[in-house]
Amino acid sequence: DTLLFYYGGHGKRDEFCTHTTCEAGDEEWLKHNDIIELLERKFHGGKVWALVDCCHSGGFGEAVMEKCNASNRSLNVQYGCIMSTPAPYTAGEEWTMTECFIKAFRGELQCSKDLQ
Image 1 (cartoon, helix red, strand yellow):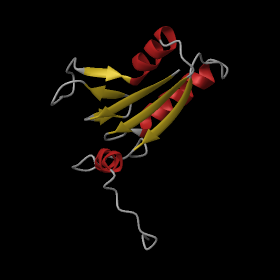
Image 2 (image 1 turned 45 degrees about the vertical axis):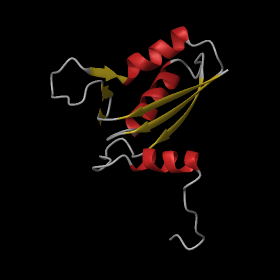
Image 3 (image 1 turned 60 degrees about the vertical axis):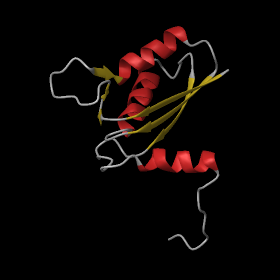
C-alpha cells in the first residue's frame, strides 16, 4: 500500500504550522520528527509519498534522511519526498507547487518545449 502525505501551509525547517497563523512559541507547530515517528509506528504499508509545499519544506526530507541514518537505514516505510524549496529557503507568497498540481490534475497544465 502507498500513502500520499500532502502539506501546504506555513513551515519552518523542522515543523509545520497546524493553524492559519503561527507565532514563535505557539503550540500549533507539528514537528517533522513526530510525523515520521507516527508513520513508522502506525502505517503498515510499503511507501509514503510526501508532497510538501511551504517555506523550508526541504526540512521534511532532511528529517526523513536523519531518521534513516539514525536507524542504520532500516525504516519500516520507504519514503519519496517532493518539496517546493530546499530547507534553508522560503517558498514565497503563493503555493506555486500546489497550483501546478491542481492544474495538472484538471488537465490544465500548459507544457512547452520553449521553457527555459
